Image 1 (cartoon, rainbow, N blue to C red):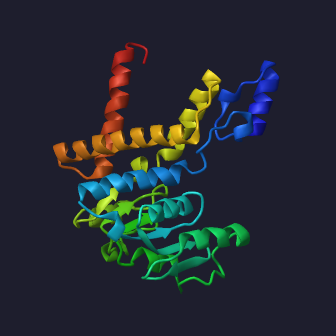
Image 2: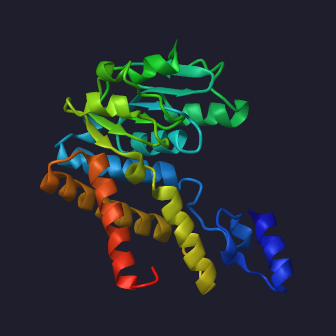
Image 3: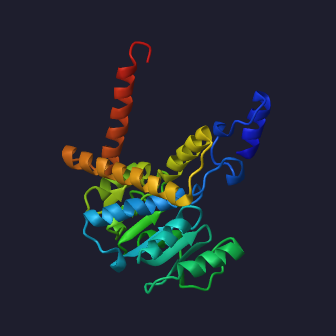
Length: 263
């Protein structure tokens, strides 16, 4: 991203930091960008838990993926008192019903790049992690992990989609018949693009925010969006995924109508 900005700026003859986001902080990037997606997932989980009257201090979580999204989500959930019982990455997963030490996991991955030989917990597969009994399941790795084949075996109360498209259409049909509360990816993992927008705004203003300010604004936007989707879901008697899509389509349609003849 730094190279893209530099190349464009060379053609313009002056620095144009707002041309692209995801830059290093030193040249116009924003604080909090790396952690934004994982934090956003947790902000939406907090709102869902409140709606379901779930005490996070008594909740358990399983997180598929321990990269930029999953590791941050695990850390933030643990800080809220959630017991993280399972995590995984490309090498497989770790499970301990008494809870894993997220800080120790983060330290291990920082030194070893992956969870492959981590001594914590028992080894499980990525597929087995998805079917564990837990309160919160966060698929935060690859798409199409929850399918028509395994959806009926999910044992979570909240499904927070940290990855893009982790649930197939066939799985959605099955989950819709259960009491699992789905936070769809278009909402749950929107934190990254929101903070990319924040980066663009800061570059335009040449005025940069603290990380606390970034996180506060991110939480406000995601909390508002969560309740808009929830209200649409209840009003139209549809699931959260369809409600989110309805809001998105409606906003684009209204904007096109306002713009007029050439829109």
